[in-house]
Image (spheres, rainbow, N blue to C red):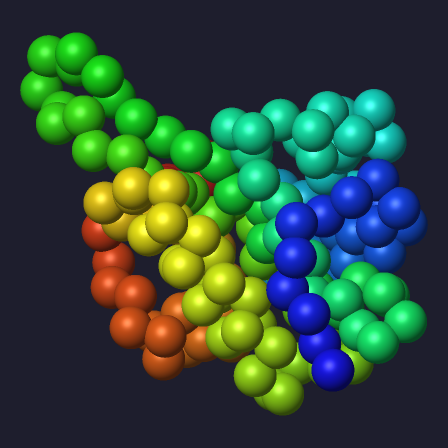
Length: 158
């Protein structure tokens, strides 16, 4: 039985393991931008701070023995009193990962649906995320969930 819940400090080892997997996917797709190796996006101190900050909810998919099988890092965003933007409340998915050995088993969908339910329960207007163009499996996954492009980042390598 898989349970989607808020992440705790006891989940850090499992989260860190998945953060390394995400870096490797990005390095494979864009080695000009992402370093390789046993690296992760956050230090343990930064990760602890995120886990305790209500503005950055982190969810995990936990197995029967509470092992971390996937995660979703989120950030609340809102542009109050902006000159051109409405003040809608958005839940931005900064990172969503399922252990590479478990992909294709609908675990990512369950994580996403839990994030969507959480966003609705906290009064969000929408859920957004970014995906690297080189990560075609992720693009197909998000399209299958019904997400559509909101904006497109472009580059010219010099």
